[in-house]
Length: 473
Image (cartoon, rainbow, N blue to C red):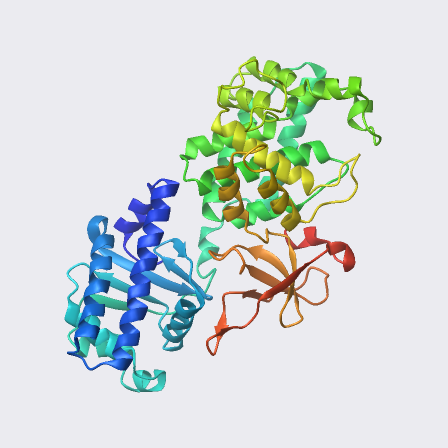
């Protein structure tokens, strides 16, 4: 987003919880801005209520100015951003955002040194209808004429504008396939008792980090790819991507996110010791067979303990990813009060989410992403760390990427991007179900003060002739 570099750099160094505090402060400031605009429609310039509204907004902005020279808000396809952070909006706030964009304003920057009188002048200028503003030279001209020096307005920014020059050398799908091939190599080498190539995993993991930090949804969307024939390899890459995305969402360091990727790709390496007839058995396993399966975390840890270049955390995650938050699960460590490593808890959530949305040998029917989220929420507090589950759901949304939605307009939409509002993602409108559709809309978009579309229900992909994978490749 356009805006102060100092503020954006400061924001990138914040922890997840500090980012949440910043977003809350920004939302409070925008709420005060909305209040000021409303006061300007009700009271004359010198009225105490109007001046009080301007003072309250100024106090909120001064909080934001403590570590930045300016505070920038932007409106993109019905979403509100403070710098690079998405800010949730209730309907009355969204209506104001819609009114602002109708005046051709895509962003507002408040600069340090701002005075109360400048806010009052700006509020009264915002009362003018769009045609009048345009005829008088535009808002920038009017601000200059009104002596407002510490407020700047920006043109409307279209989502994706200017991204051509930001494209990585490799597309997300190529990176994804590289990951699958690398996991294959490692697994085949482990089966054959050969030396494992950790260097390639490290390289791919760092490439994935760059991709996720640049555009998380592009790579996460590829985890909807499910391959029955290559489940083991695809699942490992999916777990890596989901774990890394959660790490990025939590604002972990780049090196930590890369380490999470390697842990995700290798979390099931111990399964190379399980006989193929057990792995591929479609019937219920016997107790003896199940005991063999439950030993794979130990085998994984043993394999990784002698592998240079993957780091100790991959070994720990391989050993702990089937242990539960409440001390149950397997293998039993002997010290049930010993806390699980945070990486193990992240990998466990990613592992379970991808597993229950995939068809396997013994479970041919996939669970839709939205149902998988409900299962995770149901298991929080005993299977999984409740804080991490909540954060994971905030990341993937209540309607995760790949979910089909029936909209209030009767249209079918495929979720392709998340927004700050968990119930209002961006969707691709589907008509032919052949992968050629191009029209994207945000369920945050408003028209005449009301949301243009809303999700009515989810749609089971088996009910319509569609291959969801084609939209993410």
